[in-house]
Length: 251
Image 1 (cartoon, rainbow, N blue to C red):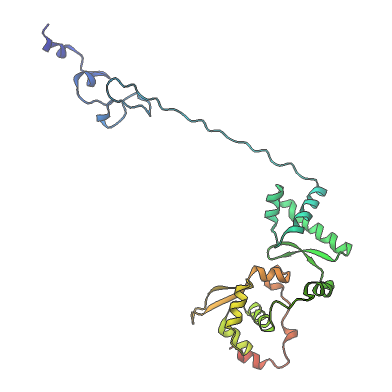
Image 2: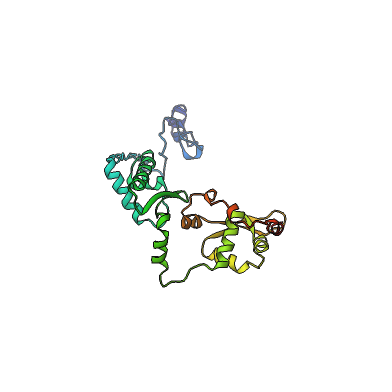
C-alpha cells in the first residue's frame, strides 16, 4: 500500500480523528472549549506532557460549643464586678457578649440588682444612663461626695460655661448666635471650651442661615446620670416671674 494511501484509509470520525488528521477538534485548546468527557481543570499541554489533575479542597466546618449558662448568683457577681470597673455606661448587649450569656438574661438581672441596692439602702445605686448601665452615688449623699471630690480643687467649669451648657441642653439643637442672644453676651469662646471638653458637639447646620447647630453629647448624659435629655428637670421652676424679656431674646 502506498504511504499516501494510509491517511485515506484511517477513519475520520471519532474522538481522536482531529488529532490524527491534524485539524483542531473539540478536545484541543484551539477549539476554544473542553472536549466531550473532559473533566474541568484538565487541559492539553505540549506533546508528551501529562495533563494536570485538578485538586479538590475540603471545607472544614468548625463547630463551636455554646458557653455554659451561668447560675443566677454567678451571673449577678460577674455583672457587679464589671460595673465596678467601667468608666462609662455599658450596654446590655456588651455585657451579654463578654459573659457569653443570652442577652435576655442580662436586663432582668440588672433590674434585680438595682432594686436590691435600693431596698438595702446603699449609698450608691445602679441605673440606666446614656443607653447603658453604671453605678452612681445617691443624690442624698451628694454633699459628702462633693466635699470629698472638690476638697482643695477648683470647679472645672466656670459659671459662664455652666450657663451656656444649660442653654444648649434645653434648647438643642441651637446655634451659637441664639445661645449668645439668650445669655446676652458673646458665647463663642465658651462654646469652643464645651466642645473641647466633649460636652457638646456640632449636629448639622441651620437651613436658613447655614450656621452650625449644637447639641449635648453622650458624655453630658453620663456626667449627669441621665439616660436621655428628656429626663432633664423641668425648666419652669427656675424661670423668673416675668419671662417676656427672655422670650424676646430667643426670637
